[in-house]
Length: 120
Image 1 (cartoon, rainbow, N blue to C red):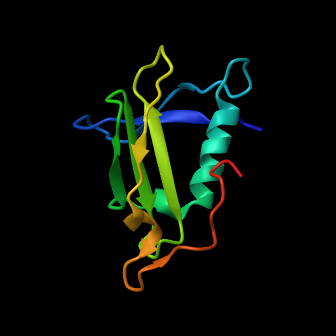
Image 2 (spheres, rainbow, N blue to C red):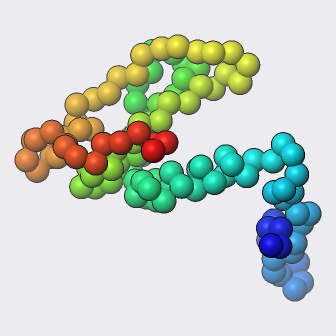
């Protein structure tokens, strides 16, 4: 199998197009192949991640932690992501999950079904 290649786009250059850059080294030790595969699997499994206007930032008790939710309009897919902004230390804190994230506005009923861990 041929190794995937990365491409960059040049703007404002005669003959504008995609130009190959060095290979990604998928088969070398220390690559991120497994991580990329896992991320792509999660993205395919969760339609909320494909939408751009469905992000809701959540309150965090720690300024070094941000949290946000990605939600489909029908609330069938709700994901909550928590991100540590400190690359060299573990952080803890409390995230406020507002009840409206888990209710269908038109009926005022809790969302049921389809709840699964992101890594499943």
